[in-house]
Each structure stands twice: as C-alpha cells, then as structure tokens.
Image 1 (cartoon, rainbow, N blue to C red):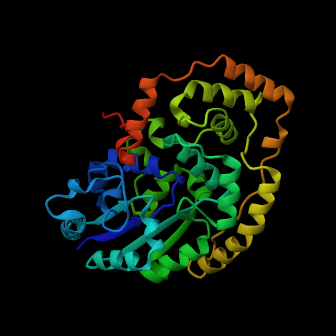
Image 2 (image 1 turned 90 degrees about the horizontal axis):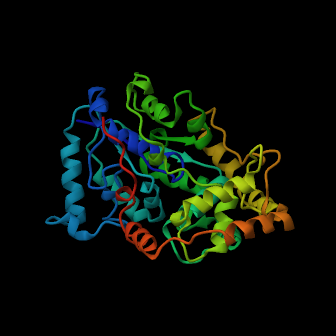
Length: 358
C-alpha cells in the first residue's frame, strides 16, 4: 500500500519549477521510493481535477471511461505502488470552494497509507500581483490593474482564488485532518538552502541533496515579470498578451527599475494600506490556527522594500521616456498574436517549455 503526499497549491509559490524538476527526475525519485506519476499534462496532475472542476482538458481525453472513471482507475493503480505517491497541482486547493467536491475527493483517495498534505501560501500583496501578471500573460481582454487589485481586496478573493487563507486552512484540515496538513509560506520555500525543490525533498523524506537531481531551464520556473512594468504594458497595449512583446517588456523593466535596480509595485500606497487593513487580521487568525500543529509557523505581509517605486511615483520625465519607448516599438505580428491565442487555449502544462533532456 502506497503512502500519499499531495501538494494542494497555491499558485505562484514556485509550483511550476518544482513540478518541472519532479517530472524531469521521475526515475531518480523512484529510486528514493517516491512515485511522481506521469499524466497527460506531464508536469503536474491537473488532469485529475476534471471530475470536480472545469479544466483545460477536453473530455474526450478521458475516453472510454470518462473523467471520474479515469481518475478511479489511476488511483487504484497508484494505491498498489511501492513507496510514496506524490501528486502535485497548484489548483487542487480549488476543491475547497465546494465542500461536496472536496469530500468526494477525500473519499476517492481512501485506501492509501499515510497521508501528507502541503499547502504553500504567499502573502496577499505579492500573490495578487503575481496572479494578475499570470492572467494577462494568457488573456488579450483588458484587465485594468488598479481595478483588479481594488476589487480583489474588497471581495477577499481573486479569479476564484480565496485570499482568506484561514478559511482555506480550516476547510482543508476539516477534510484531511489537522495533523495531516502542513502549511508553508513562499518565503520559507524561497530561502531554503536548496531552494523550493530541496524543501519538497525534505517533505517527502528524501535524504539526498537537491544537487543529486537534474535541474531544469529557467524558462520552466514561470517567473512573474516586473509588476509595474507589466501593469504599464497592460495599460498601453490592453489587447495584447503581456508576453506577446517580451523585448519591450524587458526594456520597460530596465527603464522603470533604473540603476542600480530598485523594486517596483503595481499597488498604490492607498491600495497597499487598504490591503493591510483587510488581510492582516486574517493572517493573524491563520497563524493562531496553524500554530496548534506547527508552533513555529509565521505569516505576515512584510513592509515594502526601501526605495520601492509606486505607480504614483512616475513623473512627467518617466512618462516621457515611456512614450519614447512606445513610439519606437515594433508591434507583434498577426501570426505571433494568433500563435499566442492558440497556445493560451492549451492546458497550462502543455504550453510550458519542456525541460531539456540529458
């Protein structure tokens, strides 16, 4: 009987990089007793979500048994695997939006041995910017950054993703058991001596160092671009995907960051203050709940770095420089925009660059 380790998300917590490296090292992980199943999405396991959530995978891919029948067959096969089965998808946490779906998912995974569930969190100000930038990478419809941030703060959710992590934690602990759920913040993953991948090796009980496992190209990390540069690009060219013109995005990033480079934010100071008013009490409640099983857990929105450039800091000279850059820009070709539309319609794992083999 296999044990089961599930990474529930959230998005933008190094999930793409960890999934790509896990997939690239399936054979090496298996030698350490960890099975990272191969699915049609290849890198992650979003393919298992379709019975409960709308996904990018067409239902004909699940023929002849249908989505639920396919999932049941996959889980039945994995229960008999030796060692620990690791399922990793940054969207699994969306099951918590529907108590019936989450309860059904829990029933489907019965029969495994020890269960370990991981929930990775990122503070709301960082997460909102990262989600916005990810959204405009795959959309051509206008999405005003300030309106997006303001609405997300007041609604306590964004694009169906809850920002009340205390409530999310409560739902998951009720479903899986408090002792089976571990919460980790993105900063802990980022600052681990061997990076996020090393943290997950420890979580899976693998004693080998991360250097024993092949790395993957930087493109696999799906890193967010500069937040203010991304917001300005969206304002100037709202009908284009953010990455349709990476050259201009790079030039705009260098222009805004200056020399030496300084951090930027798409939050105004007023929006930042409002975000802290809304989310700080929620995060304190989360910390209190998590510390019942993880006494050292800490989670709070940090202060902005000294010298951070806010949108309202852009003066006439800055906008004049931006205008000059825009005037000299070569717009993406119609073929490139069409290809971007085509790729955006694919499941997320299919449109990511593949790790180099060897």
